[in-house]
Length: 285
Image 1 (tube, rainbow, N blue to C red):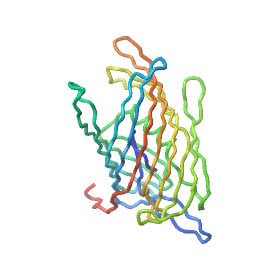
Image 2: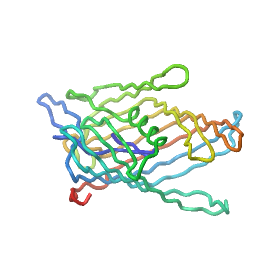
Image 3: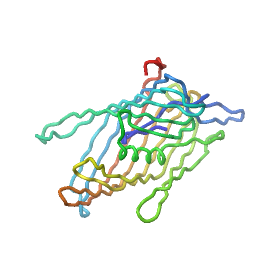
Image 4: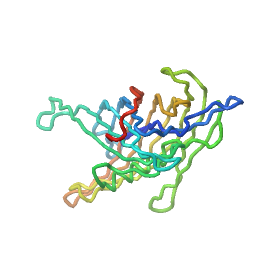
């Protein structure tokens, strides 16, 4: 359960009641660990290239590097299998200056989410801490449903594979997105005993226009995702994740009574690494 954002990203909340245990026959149980005040700090570096395509011709190409700090704190336990997590992400990137394209501006942004997460990794609910933004939240929820692993109930060993599917409602008839996960090995990584989990699949996420925006933009994202996740099964947390996304975007933009359609081809390489694990005073959260 990680990957932001971009949407941000990533939730790799280390939360698992009882963590993961080693079975008598060598199997492990994948679970996140709930503990009020548990705070995990991650560094995420995303390298992104976006090509804008109109009438089968590339009209623009931009490469950007995003450096993000993600802090996830277990605020409280809701029941035996669910915790409320506060996730704060801060990131910055460089863009050409609006008034001078030869100059570079460094842009800083911040996002705060409140999530309800089960020990098996399923996200029950998500919202922005500052208030409602239904359009962005629906995109993030779609991503969480389609792109984050929900761990099996039984013990697993290397070569164990499972597939998750989700129906996506689009004009016409629903289509199905799927993601396959495979436990490839058990290794020692960054001082932790980890299960190495590979992922491979496709997400299909509608992009809705925001009624508050002057320019109305809508479309569809088809995301091919491959990667590998290192999960510390004793502590119940993500230690490291590497992913590659290839996104085909269809976009429709409407402004001043005119409509423009175009496509974007996006490639993103994401590194997500644990930098700190502490217990903070839950009363101060």
